[in-house]
Length: 340
Image (cartoon, rainbow, N blue to C red; front, top):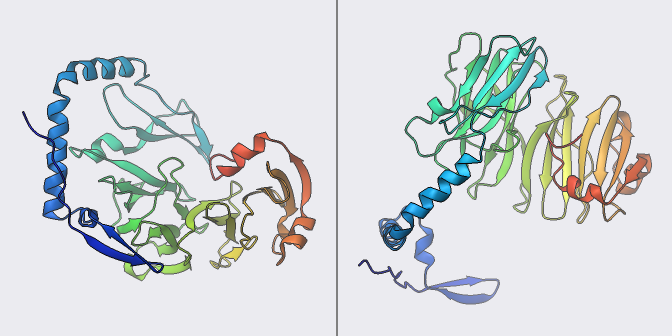
């Protein structure tokens, strides 16, 4: 019978913040090291051995759970311009199809991405970002092919069905909302987010179609390592927006998506403990915030008066709408795709 592996100790002193501690397993952080991989494989072999007798039960439970899932499911279609966009699954296939229909739900289906074919024989495949150009003729999407959450952006010409030559590596893509790529209104460029050495999303670049991604323009960098950067667009399509989120503090930055500028401006500079989310509609910004409202409140301000330098003045410009305990849950996750 196989015996359980014991990781060897390799003492290493680490001095931080004026204190020294001993870490016997520091060596295991180097995941590509041959000795680390050898130990991890030994653990996996041990697990397989001792769990062998549960294989029939595992299969029984898997089939029971699978039997309760609708395999040929699909999302509700969402209209964008002339097209209805949706995802659907086919029985026996692991990944979805990203599709659209022009003009009517009775129109012929156009498959934008067959993720099953995209995955091929790989054990893992995830679509990160997904964005259609304003003229609906191009699609930028990103793929995480190995589970590292590091995505590669590809650009597809939806008229010819061919991929453009430029490929952009080390990018961020939100698996849930598929945000992280936003097209400029002119349709010739798009914005995307890259990761730092710790995989934190921290920079926003602009890519011009047909150019070398190495020459892409840096538009914004978040230097504070405690903040996570996300990229989105207002539902009105009038603004490109980015949100900077720490544990209990938010900041939103934006610029009008009309080609006049690509310079981000702060909606409200960050103040520790103040959380807020922003959406735009018509002539107003709508804001959910916990400023003087523990369970959050919903407010609005004119698009023309959003850029006010002090929190007090900014809040005075907002028209109070309402607050409710129910807002607390929605406010914390009210990014694109979840705000009404």
